[in-house]
Length: 296
Image (tube, rainbow, N blue to C red; front, side):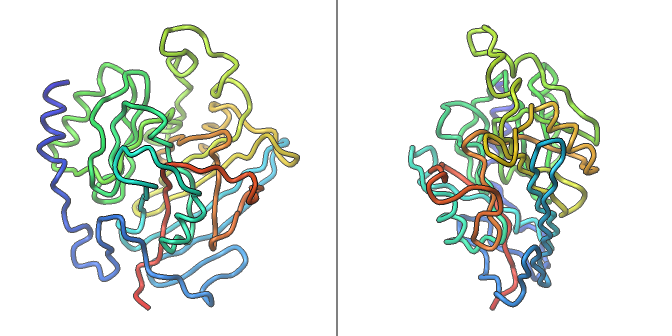
């Protein structure tokens, strides 16, 4: 663990020029993207030279899935934003954050301010290094690739190998569980059905149908955001295992749950794409989004 922390400290301030030579690269900071021209939108799509988005809804067995299929030209277009300074317990409406940053598609993040531990990075800035031994970690690297590090005894070495290979952490999340790794479904581990004191939390998030939000990767610079709606008239929600099995049907290589329940929210074209409305929107600490990199 000490070696891992040392490596993290050594690499934390090294943020390479991502996709060097790519005319559509954005700065790795907390600025937003370029404003997407209105004429590039249709009801369910967005298209420009740097970004392709296709939105889709599927109703399956009483569950509404909201899906955003995304292709970007540069890894810098997959971005995060926070409501305040690093680790500052500040929240904002995710819709307001997404619109201020010119997001084409945005979803909620891992609501990291609700916890005091975890490996947390945002836009190349390290917030925390305190690994939670019960939680899977998602890392997005300099190439825009998603990596999940499972909460097991091999994780420290895997992360050391990842950093030693020259990768840079651009964004890191501690929530989970990881649902898919290397194209294979991951059943929920026992640690996600227990409280920190070891008592069973079987009636909590992982074991009952609930709203879920997932970020996943299909291939290089190709992603899918998926929300399983729940607790409303159109959708009963899913368990985490059911969500993972659905992600397998989409053909993803990597999939990871961010915050679910009342935090779940998806925006497209600055508007609710799911069944949320103004009164149901919940203030949160962070979002994940994609944006245009075409100057206008």
